[in-house]
Length: 180
Image 1 (cartoon, rainbow, N blue to C red):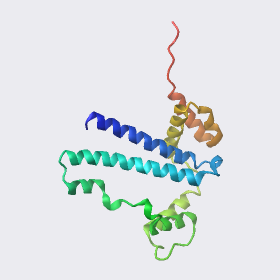
Image 2: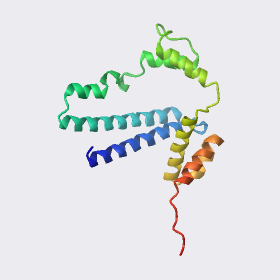
Image 3: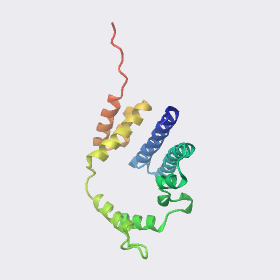
Image 4: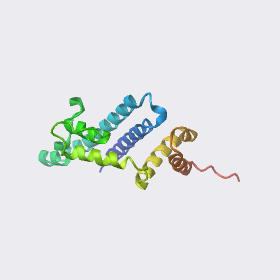
């Protein structure tokens, strides 16, 4: 990968991750008044940024002679969904399963509805998936360090998450030279 493209990809991926961290931030209880608006803004911004990454790489592949069939295959275009069309039947089925509601007509046995039910069942237990907690702590700690606002972690995160995020933020502190 050419160096300028590599750097652009890294910058865009970092931007997408920052937006996804904001999605997590706006799910916290102290954000009750803005969670709907801000989670949608940040999730769609992250999605658009991820698409820019894919299209930049695709443009490079096309420029260097990759066939359109191979490019289409690599882009997995059959999996894409337009936000402009709004939530799909599958999205509504997944949500019904998550919320413990009856399945929309014709979706009672759909993978989406059943996945929602499984996720709802898992939500009844404490959040203890170590890799998920660690990932969230890293994102929150990084953001707090970048904004130089580590103390804010205690105001919106559960204590266990705040402690882990603080450790991440502390580990990112730039060491000061020792006086001679």
